[in-house]
View (cartoon, rainbow, N blue to C red):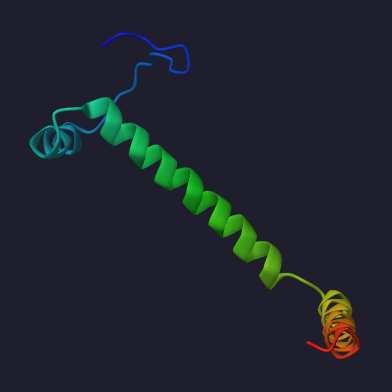
Length: 84
């Protein structure tokens, strides 16, 4: 495997059964582990976003609702004024 400019070689220790399963399912360990890490990273980002949205205050929710109502009114006025 040639090192590409955007990749780095690392050494990790994995459970033997997990590594055997990877080898049975793929002939490219690096690709499997890279994909697993991408999925892990995306899950962490999803978790952070979920936590952010679940922890919003009532004041934040009220402000978002007010902005949404304002935007809706502006859209309706624009449509009416433009004759669309």
